[in-house]
Amino acid sequence: MVHGVASSVVSASIAAAFCFLGSALAQGQDILQRPTETWRPPDGTYAAPDNNFDEVCGEFGDFILELSKKAILSNERICKIAKLTDTAPGAIRLSLICDDYNLAISLGDPHPYERKFREVMLLKRIDTNTLSVRKTLYGKFTAPAWQALYCPEEKQRWYRDARERAKSEARKAAPR
Image (cartoon, rainbow, N blue to C red; front, side):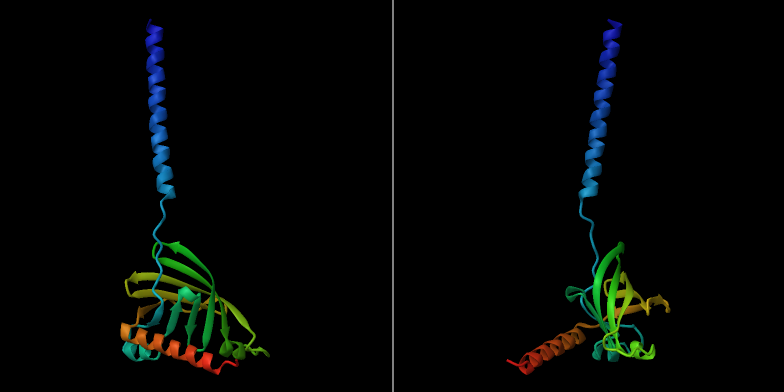
């Protein structure tokens, strides 16, 4: 009789342990299967928040981020985003393939229009409108990170309007 009671207690303990373990595994799977929230900075023009901020924004900023089109534009550089990687909450790494005519010329490239450069841009969210930006030049991080502020909506509108005008003019100029 004692043996039967002990056996029942052991069986009940094992069953309780399996129930607990099953519950814990189910909760763990639920946590693993929940989608993580990803951060993406908004498309648009960005400029360093210094004394010339408004002026630079009026000239389409220090750079234009177009994640939706997988592109980054700055000065005389056009970069296609080859890969976007989430590196941490509020941080992404962009692998870029860039055309940089001036850099190609400075390197003595005989075909500067054909030269492509593999670069990396790191973006970290500081707040809703501010990013930390760090970019390689010729594949190397040569400068520290800097802050970029999303330009005011009026300047964003100027850029969008100019982009649409350029598209319209290109369609009109295209041979039919």
